[in-house]
Length: 112
Image 1 (cartoon, one colour):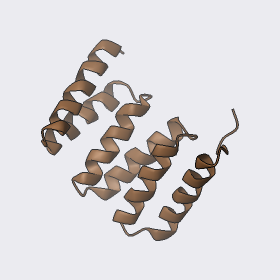
Image 2: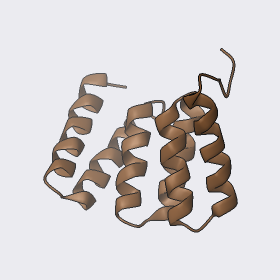
Image 3: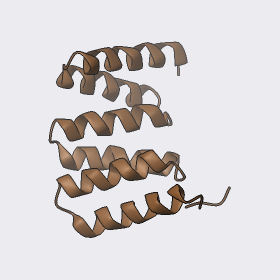
């Protein structure tokens, strides 16, 4: 895996997102996670742009991958909760929100 190439694609995705080209951003972020499946920032960004595109099931998949890679990341759980709400999966949204709340008060989901 070439981290320079990954970072370049990620930056291109961020630029596309910044100018409102959501489909293009999604394509760049998809390339990023294909190139480096262990790259948390890529999964998180990919999930968020998929949510903006109302591709909720795909967004949830990316969000789950982000929380798997970094289970103690508050923002990842918050985003996943939003994705579930958008897909009308309220029980799952509440569970993700609860995990975010635990992290927000200093707890851990997974002990390191």
